Length: 329
Image (cartoon, rainbow, N blue to C red; front, side):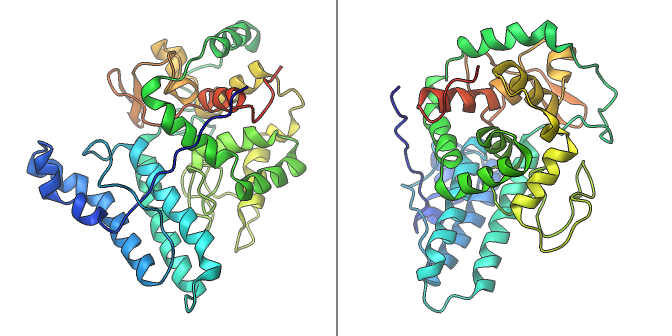
């Protein structure tokens, strides 16, 4: 198979100026929209400039994102790449303290968390507000459909470079070491752990796998109060192991393709399928099997909203196409 060619996203010193309100106005964005555009991007630009003053390396990005909006598909890669750049360059930065690094990472992580929580739908789990809304379909009734959808899945051309970015994070050596450590404790395939991490935590190693909350404390979103017991400071691996055990994924021996997709859909919830009769964006966003329709808030469905987060099955497809893993049976 042909390996995906990974493209690099970058943040530059000219980011703040390029993304300021005058830039947005030149693109035809109204003043009110320009203020929205500035919020996340200008905060990230400020972090980038602060990191550079400390002698840390941060990625560079030419002029601006392709659209003058706060689309998650643009924001997420920029913030995660910034965090990775800080982490990688920290050991070689003279005079930079661990508190300097922690402050930058924490602020970037919070920026990412805010963007992610605004984009994704809340999970349907026992203590969640949507828990009793629908009944899960029987696996036997949907398993063949999963296989058929995966076999015919095609990544939309306009999203291919973004999907490549997801693959680059899944296969990153440092992250994979952590995913492999979780596999050793749970027997959940490393790439299944990685994909859940992408969906729930945006590949942020300072956030709980359960729901993307900060590792600095127990989770505050559902599932609330995890890990239990929690012995701070909690590391990402131990928290991830707790997340998988909480959902009893460590008890599952069958990680065939259909079972995996069934578990992932159940992990997020069945309402898109059962109530609105669409292929859930949690699995199929950025592919030919999803066009529009998503929850934009608790119990609020928008039939015209489009997910800006790559689906779990699409990440899996890209890993297979890139030759990073064998096709699941």
